[in-house]
Image 1 (cartoon, rainbow, N blue to C red):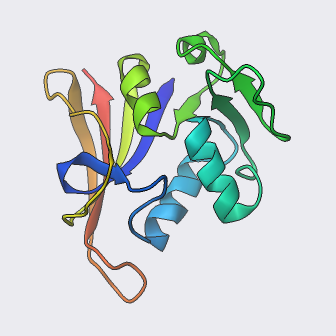
Image 2 (cartoon, rainbow, N blue to C red):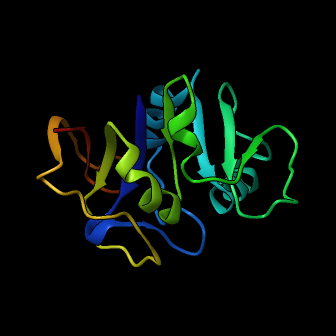
Length: 161
């Protein structure tokens, strides 16, 4: 199975200046619950933003970085250079961004795990439109803003029809 994991605000905004434009601890926990113990695939910019925040690759996950730069070789991750490479793995994969990687791999995905952030947020990175002819919503879990999470949000699962 290939799954995409994404948090997006209204207008499909997923990022601003190479970072998440919100802080939702519940979404970070949800992301960790979904991806821990699995293989995550991300673009170089997403990987570098994770390292800037955590100081290391995502723990308890096999980290694979997709990049066109054939000399890029950070410690603690595997590198792939072909966007179709995720389709050749024999294990479940979780594609975690960024925008270019999502756009290039959404056609490979079997499932989307979407955190829908109910807010208008300026951003420079967007998730592709979720086409209802291809994707069926199979689960939705609404949540309200609270003292730790500044926006209302829903955890949504879409499965390929």
